[in-house]
View 1 (spheres, rainbow, N blue to C red):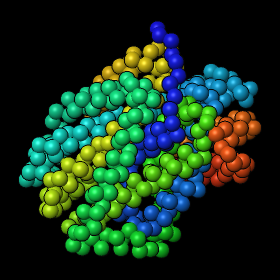
View 2 (view 1 turned 90 degrees about the horizontal axis):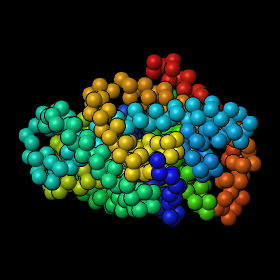
View 3 (view 1 turned 30 degrees about the vertical axis):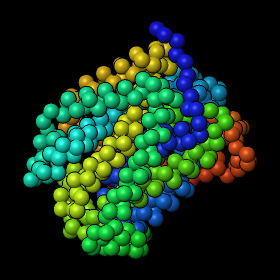
View 4 (view 1 turned 90 degrees about the vertical axis):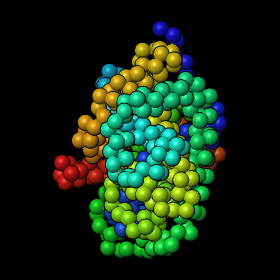
Amino acid sequence: MANYSKDLFSSRWGFIFAAAGSAIGMGNIWLFPYRAGELGGFAFLIAYIICVFVLGVIAVIGEITFGRLTGKGPMGAFKKALRLSGGHNKAGELIGWIPVVVIFIISLGYAVVVAWVLRFLAASVTGAAFSAPNSIVYFESISSNGVAVWIILTLFLVGLAMLGGVEKGIEKLNKFMMPAFFILFFFLVIKVAFLPGAIEGYKFMFVPKTDMLFNPRTWILALGQSFYSLSILGSILIVYGSYARKSEDIVYSAKSVAILSTLASIFASLAIIPAIFSFGKNLNSGPSLMFITIPDIFKTMPMGQLCMLIFFIAVFFAAITSLISIIEVIVEALQSKFKMSRLNAVLIAVIIASIFSTLADGHIDGLMDILQIHLVPFCALITGIFVFWILPLNRVIKEIQSGRSTMVSKWLISVGRYVFCGLVIVIYIFNLLHLG
């Protein structure tokens, strides 16, 4: 076995773009507009922004701090946290396995969706997706025939990008793909603004509907969306935090990630929702929104083929950077636990993910629901408890303070302890009682 050496992000914006790349993905582009359509547009947007900047930023700060303080991914971080607090090392490592297993299962479903995006991107280049007479039939053929090849190709590209390591692979890729994502979506936002009837979409997004704002379901799903959109999973941000230099300002980075993720959700909504209103489509169309409804709209738009190509390039950039961050958790766990080289860890992670994603294709919808409803909030909760309750308070504050020119207020810890952990417990109980 080769010696395992830690690679670090080289710059502040390299770290921020990588963390944003992990956060910005299908949750921003597909799920956010879908939830906004379901829950009154502006009401959901307001609830989401409040959840992100009141609770989400605290959670991001906590997870990055956890990773940088311990210098480890989940297994090592939980283990070291218990050691620092006088607990049992083995118990911490066992707890750390939970978010690693959860993120691995998430990778199986996510790899399939990214493979669909890659296939649609290829079909947009050739014109096959644009010229398909029936988008429903075309998507069914895409999602059921030859998916294994595209899953393997997707994970091969992921592995190729990751072989460069943290600085020359993950950081370099995100520094290109994240700005490119925003530029491409900005083009689509401008293009959609000139569609007839687009104004109705803007009214839907920005005219307040107070009845939905006072609906508890709006706030429950907005909080869940904020977790999903910020990668608050007890794994990815811990790993990326372990790659952050001590000179990085964690609070600034967390706020920047939250702003970029929120802007991505708003950009996606400004490109999708007005277009849907313009063409009289159904906003509450679930997963088919991206692969059936949006292609149908492009087919009737001026410069539609170009817009379809730009859309799927942007979606692919967001999806692939998120998948890279997911697989990186597995790679870090293999390197940390078995002291193997990055090459071997990446190869093993990609091969295992390819095999299981192919086998699981079409059979993990129910499992993904269990993950999102029960296990993801649980991982966020145990991370919050470890950071804000179990780790020595002075160590946590000192770590957050590192890289900052202004003093960290202790209210941050209080919000993490009582508001964040308390609300996650409430949401978790609500999910158990009402969502099975």
